[in-house]
Image 1 (cartoon, rainbow, N blue to C red):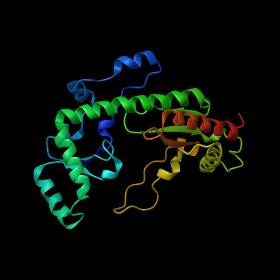
Image 2 (image 1 turned 90 degrees about the vertical axis):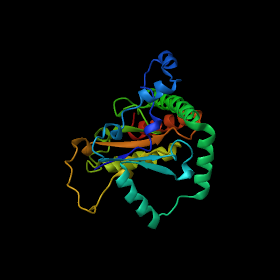
Image 3 (image 1 turned 60 degrees about the horizontal axis):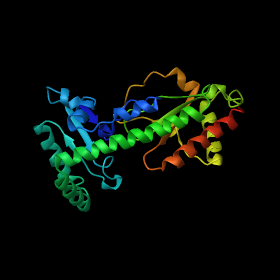
Length: 250
């Protein structure tokens, strides 16, 4: 079986470009064009009923809805319905009523219009964030890959170039902690990558994955451009860049 967990599927964006004049002509306005621009879903390639796709309204309508849906083969979904009846039983009735009324009012056409507007909005916010990172972050210690979907971005930091790397016992997590504390002093909060690390034994046990060599010398921080005003976003990233300059004595 393949579990296709796609809460950000409809938040795909245009490819990032540093050419600001080229950004204007890349926006999508047509329904067919929007659908064709989406990366193919695993379930669209499934011929054996082996894919279960999970979608969510929480990322495209409102985070408080806590409402989503499952796509899969009929017999398998029937078992999900039975499980649902003895587990959660039902999501929030208010969320269901609100979403049902909204989608009935919009129809398929209106929902696609909304998703197209989201694509344009998130593309612009992503561009503003990446522009600021490219402008302010020290290029010899920081690197990034512009996201193509979702509402988050990550910045990779070379911990081995920190002036106290040897003093820290060549432990990149100590560099991460120092940067995190300094960034708070400078007025910016980005989530350290170690917060997303999965440790301990799973059930059932999983095979140990090979260690990535870069984990010994690099750390990353995650930020979001979803809800913050653009001027605050740029200021926050400039503040984080200042924290890097202070920590690395640049």
